[in-house]
Amino acid sequence: MSCVILREVAVRSRFFVFELENAAFFEMQDPYRIFLDGVFIRQSRHVVDTIYDLLPQTSYSITIVLFDGTTLSYSFTTEKETVTLDVRKFGAKGDGVHDDTPAIQAAIACCPAGGRVWIPYGVYHTGSIFLKSGLFLDIDAGARISAFTDREKFPLLPGCVERTDGKGDCLFASWEGNPLDCFASIFTGIGVSHVTISGQGIVDGNAGFDNWWKNDGRIKTDGGFRPRLVFLNRCSDVLVQGLTFQNSPAWNLHPYFSDHTQWVNLTVRNPKVSPNTDGIDPESVDDLTLLGCDFSLGDDCVAIKSGKYYMGDTYHVPSQNIEIRHCRMENGHGAVTIGSEMAAGVHDVHVTECEFLHTDRGLRIKTRRGRGKAAVIDNIHFEYIRMEGVLTPFVVNSFYWCCDPDGHSTYVSSKTPLPVDDRTPSVRNLEFNDIRAENCEVAACFIYGLPEAKIEQISMRHISILFSDDAKPMYPAMMADLSPCAKKGIFIANVRDLLLEDINVTGQEGPIMELQGIDHKEMDTCEQQ
Image 1 (tube, rainbow, N blue to C red):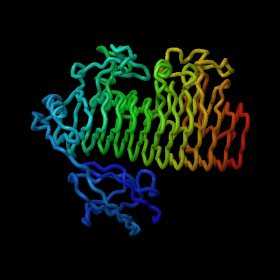
Image 2 (cartoon, one colour; image 1 turned 90 degrees about the vertical axis):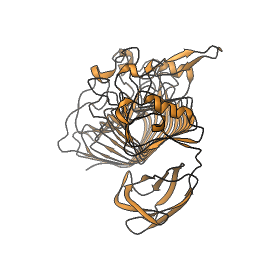
Image 3 (cartoon, rainbow, N blue to C red; image 1 turned 90 degrees about the horizontal axis):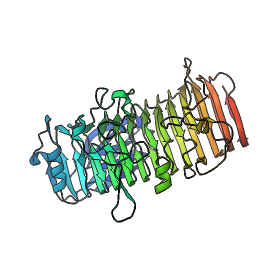
Image 4 (cartoon, rainbow, N blue to C red; image 1 turned 180 degrees about the horizontal axis):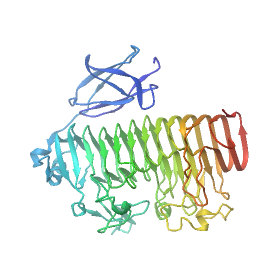
C-alpha cells in the first residue's frame, strides 16, 4: 500500500472530499481509519470519501491510517461562507405534508453569493426548485426532499424559445436528444455558475408505475415529458456531492450544454424494472468528472450524449473531456454507454478503476445511420475495469434501432455498404486495457461497425473474460436481424485497424473469435482456456 496517495478532490465551507489514488476500484477490501486534527472520527472503505460538519475558513489536518499501518496526511483550509440560511426560518415545515417549495425557493432567492442554504433533518415535500449562481445548497443527513407526483406541481419548460434579438433560440428543455417541452426537474439550473449541491440527505422523486412510469413513461402527457431529479442547462462550475438520488421519474441526473461539472460520492437508486431511468446523461458537455459514484437502476448507468440530428447540425456541441473514476455501476442496461443520441459527437472519454456488476453490457456504444457526419466517437479509453455478471462486456452497435420511427428500416439495418453522405456517423479510436470480466453469459465481445464507414481503430490489451456455467441466451445488442446467443466468443466486424494483445476467453461455446471485414489486424496472444 506504499504507493497510495491522498489527494484533494474538493473543499467547500462545510466539507472536504478526498481520493485515495492507487488504492482500489470503488471500495477497499479492508477499512482504513480517518483522523481529523488527531482525533479519530470513523472508519471507511470508500476510495473516495467526504468529511462533513466542518467550519468555514478553518484550517484542518486529515490523517488516513491504512490497514497495513501506512499513514497519509493532508492539510487544507475550508472556504469562506457569507451566511447560512435555515429553510425552516423561511417557513419550511419538513413534515412531509406541507408544500415546502415556496419556503426553500425563498431562501435560495434571498441567499447572497457565497452563502449556504441549509435544509436540516425532516421530510420536505416539493415540486421544482430553481438554483441560482453562487449558491451552496446543503441537504443535511436525515433530510429528504420528497417530490410531488402531481404534474400540476411542476412548471412546464418549453423546449426552445426564439430570441427577440435575432440570435437564434434559447433552449430550456430536452427529451431524448431533441428540444421538447418537459416538466421542470426537482432541482433545475438554467444558466447558473459556481453552485454546490451537497450533503448526506436524500432526493426522492417518488416515481412509480401508478404515476410517472405508467405506460412505460415515454408518452408526453399534460403538455410535457417527465422531469429529472437534477437538470443543469447551460451551467458551469457546478459540484453535486454526497447525496442519494432515488426513484426518478426519468433520467436521474442530466447536465446539458454545461461545462466544468463534478459529480462526486453520489448514490443513485432506481428499481431495475423502472423505465428510462438512466443514472447520469451528460449531453453536449465539456470537462465533466464522475468520481466515486454508486449506480443501481433500470437503464444505462452512464449515458453520454450530444443530441439527435437537429441538435448536432444546429449547435455543433459535442460531449468531450469526460473522466469517470472509482465508480460502481450495477443492474443497468449498460454500465458506460455512448449514444445513441450523439449527433454532435463524443470525444475524449476516460473510464478507469471502476466496477461493473450485473449490467447487460459493460461498454455500450450505440450509433446508427442518420446521426450525421458530425456524430464522431473518438478517443474512448477504458482501463483497469472489473466486471462481474455482465452479460456482454464490450458492445459497439452501429445499427441501433431503438427510439426512432425508422429504427427497423432498411436504411438503418442494412449490412451491405450504403453511400457515405451527411447522415453517416463514424467511430474512430477505441482502447481497452487491463479489463477482467467474470460470469458473463451472452458474448465476450460484440462489435459491428458500418461497412461503408468502418471503425477506424480498436486496440484491446490484457483482457480476460470468463463465462458462467449456466449462461442463458439473450441478444448481445439491439439491432435488427440478430439472434439470441449464449457463450459466444469475440465477434468483431468492419474495422480498419484491429490490435488484440493478451486476450483470454474461458468457457465459450464455438469459435473463440469471429472476424469480418477487418482491413488490418495484429494479434499477439488470443487464447481459449
